[in-house]
Amino acid sequence: MSAWVWAISLVVLTAVLILDLVIIGRRPHEPSLRESGLWVAFYVGLALIFGVGLALTNNFTIAGEFYTGWLTEYSLSVDNLFVFVIIMARFGVPRQHQQKVLMIGIVLALVLRGGFIAAGAALLAQFSWVFYIFGAFLIYTAINFFRQGEPNEEDFKENALIRWTRRALPVSRDFSGTRLTVHENGRRLFTPMLIVLIAIGTTDLVFALDSIPAIFGITQEPYLVFTANVFALMGLRQLYFLLGGLLDRLVYLNIGLAVVLGFIGVKLVLEALAGNNLGFLNGGEPIGWAPHIPIWLSLTIILGTLAIATVASLIKSSRDRRAEEQVPVG
Picture (cartoon, rainbow, N blue to C red):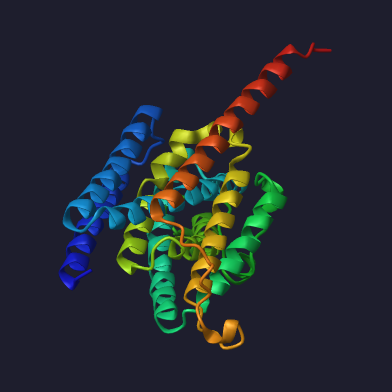
C-alpha cells in the first residue's frame, strides 16, 4: 500500500479511537446491552465496509485476506475477554470504570502490536524460513489450547512486573475513580488502577504472541495485518459488556480456536515448504508437493469452525442448565 493510503487510514482510525475516548471520559458508566450491541454493530459494520472498499480499489483476494485476518483476530480477542473478566474480578474494578480501563488497555495493545507487526514484517521480508518458526509455534499453541480448556480464575497469575510494581511503589487500598494517583495523609500514592492497567497491557502482550503469527499466516501485507488488528480491537470494549455472562457458556471456544490456530500453523508450514530455500531441506529447492491453500478456503474453514464451536457451546450450556434445574433441591 502507498504512503498516502497508510496516512489516511491512520488519521481516520485515530479519529475514531479519540472519539471513543472522549465519549467514555465525559460519561463513565456501565453500558446497557442495547448500547453495547449498537457499538459492536457499528464497528463490525465499519470492518465490513472497509473490506468492500478494499475489493473495489484493489481486488477480491485482498478483501478476502482482510476479512479472514479480521475474523481470526476478532475470535482470538474473544479469548482475551475471558482473561479481562478474571482481571477485573480479581482487582475489584468498579463496573462503571471498566470501560475506561478496557479502552486504555486497547490503545496500549495497538501500540504494542504495531511494534510486533513491524518486526514480523521485517523478519519475513529478510528470512522466509521464519514461516517454519511461526507455523510450529501456532501448532504448539493449538495443542496447549486443547489441553488447557476454558480459562478460570486460578489460571491467572500475577507476572513479575505486577509483583515488582506492588513491592516497589506505594499503592493505596482503594480505587479513586479512574485516577492513577491519589493524595493520602500528605503522601502521593498510586491507585490499584495502575496495577490493573499493567495486568491488562502485559496480558495482551502475551496474546499478541499468538495472534500476530496467526494473521501473518493469512497475509504478509503489513497494511492488512495492521488494519485487521485495529478493527478487531476497536470493538473489543463493547463486546466485553455485550457478551457478559455469555462468555461462561462458550465452553468449546478454546477447542475452536485451537483448530483455527492449528490450521493456520499447518498452512504456514506448507507455504514455507513451497518456497523453501533451506540448504539442508530438499537441497535448498522448493518442495513441489506442498499444496497452496486459497484464501476462500481459509475463510470458509475458520468461519465454519468458529460457528460450530459457538453453536455446540450454546447447546451444551443449555442442556447443562436444564439438567441443573431438574435436580431436586435437598
